[in-house]
Image 1 (tube, rainbow, N blue to C red):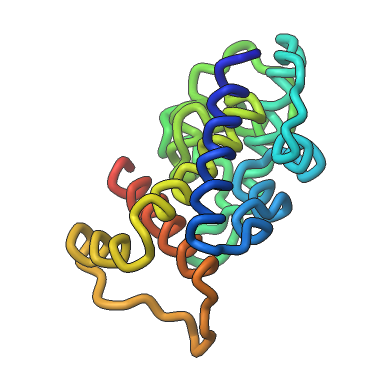
Image 2 (cartoon, helix red, strand yellow):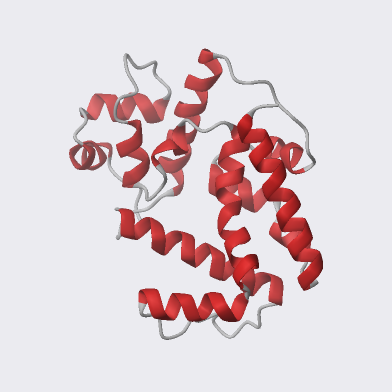
Length: 199
């Protein structure tokens, strides 16, 4: 069994145990559609991994296709401060890559090298390995904020956020959150703020 699959199995077992202990809704935590939207891993693959199914290690061709698919996912789902998709030229200038390289990366045109992939992922606030992770590793990485949140407990994590990042409060726009939603939200905020610190 690949290391990433073992790591994911351990993470899922931990989440299931903590969710049961805290009487949280496991289906909300392990929502395949929501996780697919955060990882760029297709929803059907995400659901299969959550069920414990295993996939063979990708061939070099499959790995390159994954890089292009996740790059296109980041480009399509991210917006600049004006709410528009990032311009290829702006991404290229920020990461020090030729605009043609970025254009080919997001459009699926084969590349001579993948040398700027880490910088491309970092531009969008993701881990350098976001484009190259196997589906199991990508899902495992996406679940880590939930594990941290479950380990800490909602009250502890909010105190940690306030102390570390100077947050005063978190607005839910008048909606009352379930304990599960609060736990997931705090874990996600921690993950996003930690990524901002790295950028």
